[in-house]
Image (tube, rainbow over all chains, first blue to last red; front, top):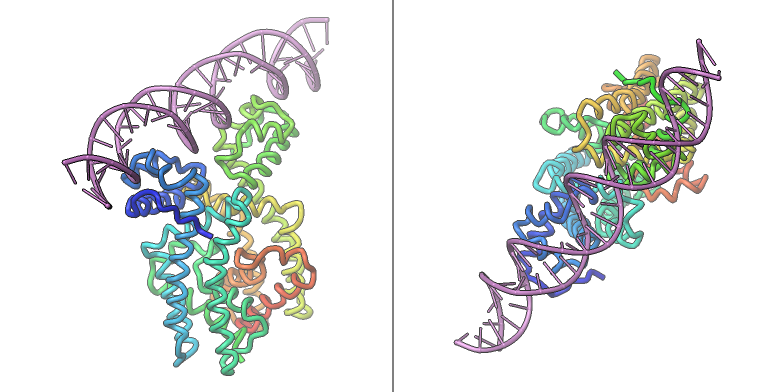
Length: 207
Length: 207
DNA sequence: TAGTTATTGCATTGACCGGTGTAGACACTA
DNA sequence: TAGTGTCTACACCGGTCAATGCAATAACTA
């Protein structure tokens, strides 16, 4: 479905998308001007229109690709920590810490972009938002739900609705907008947050 | 700290704030033009500047007052359902359903506005965001934490960190951006969502 | 090397927006 | 009734922005 148009040089295109990601994430769709994006990407304003039809198409490309990339990382973490279980609680905590690590990694701008998408929800074509969701957060939740379902089959968890359980776990683990995110800087605070979240989830779902 | 300037007629001012709330919530700070807000409020463009210094001050006023009003409602719900407990699980479920009811009430635009605030976070003066948080979400969480703390003292819950527990409960109860919010329309789905959230929380924190 | 394509800088267009000035209409009060 | 302050309609300014046109340059390819 993605229109991988063949025009333009690939590296220029990537520079544009990366720069646009940064500015869209920080400033939002309206504030981020194409001039600023061009400057950030080290590219002529005019070149952007050689790769993308207009600002809206650039934005949709950015959220798609960022969503895809971060989902890949997340799915990777899930596979790594829930592949084979030795101690479920400990494994979940480490999964949570890896999760939190992504929030502060070089992928950090993505999560600011997610906030922009959530705010811009009335002005994004439903199909684009649907596609973004499906290959991003939706895919991660499905993957996690599958893993939890397997663990339930092995008697390690009791779960009625795996999708809901996966959603709950993601909520409890992630630093959300209810916690001051200064907590992310402190290692022990990070461990405390994830541990508390995992336990609240685990004792709610454990056999 | 709030500059309740005495200029202008109060009802005009309220109309402006209400209209601005609607448009800021739907379109965001940048997209919502003062002309559109004036039209929505049934007021002259020029009149807005009779009540507010500029667009930024109007925005801060809007998020403050909306936050305050919704927090009042939420605190009310907490007091009503956790004042005296008969069946903790049932009471929490009903609290959750009341909570969800607010999301779909006439206060609904507020929650879209919250998403705008979260997106606009880099462009709001820290002091304004702090004030918004303190008398809004922060106050609600403190109130809920106090109640949970009392319940823990009475032996109905086991809680290490009441603030964290309150945050977890709010997360699990609320329709979040991980669930397709079409679920809010269906009564049985609403009950299922809140019940599942309450149980996941409760078995994580009970006794 | 010759030819094709991408990129660049710059100028321009048309639209929108925040904010101000002004003068008259309107409402309230003493 | 006279006076004070608010509201309204309208025109205006300076600035920004998305998008396009164009001609010159650079990079790639056959």
